Amino acid sequence: MELVEMEKRAFDFAHQAHGLQKRKYTEEPYINHLERVANLVKSVPHTPTMVCAAYLHDVLKHTTVSPKTIRRNFGKEVALLVDELTDEFTKEAYPHLNRRWRKKKEAERMSKINWGTQTIKLADILDNLPGIVEHDLKFAKTYVREVEVLLENLQDGDASLRQRVTEEIQAAKNKIEELAQ
Image (cartoon, rainbow, N blue to C red; front, top):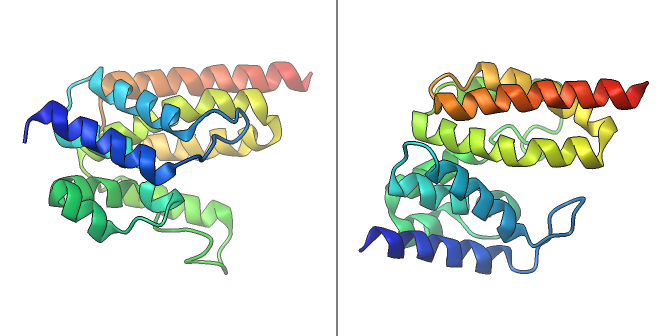
């Protein structure tokens, strides 16, 4: 299958799977977030499977699509990346544990995944962080702390995206401090 065709199929699949879902805060179509993440991945050294996984990275979390369906439609490499990008330490799976513990465990798990998955995660953070800071200052304080811990564990992801996340964290801290005064 031609690589561009595979990316297009991933985009179309994600678009259909997410349907009319909207982004929290902005109410924009969810597919816009997925497209921005994929474009960030395309802006750095990447593989075609990474681009497909970038489009599909929230499918298991936010839809009824199964890992088996991803594997059947896009192969085991894409399915592995999507699975690695899906939180394991969720409130549903670990209801007796607090958010801080779950996020710490998730960050530790992410430290062991491959560079491609880490690169997609960095792109996802880059797209999420500014919007959270802009629209939900209270949650942004928590989210920025969580992203800092996560970033410490994403050492194998693309260095330029990692640097951009570091800069966004600092910008977020500055904005939080400015708005708190």
